[in-house]
Image (cartoon, rainbow, N blue to C red):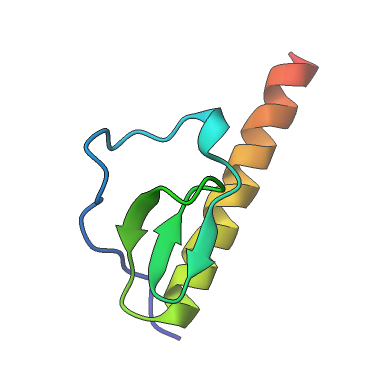
Length: 68
């Protein structure tokens, strides 16, 4: 299996905030739940993997904030 890769971010502000989640894969594009573009991936499969990993990471960070 190849390592997922992503092109440069599209948005001017390259940092994601908690309000941007969940991230959704739209073909080979990654978008916030509001539809704002975040990045492009090499394929739909990679976009799906990246979105899943970003959402899992954001979920863990949110849980850590509440447990602290």
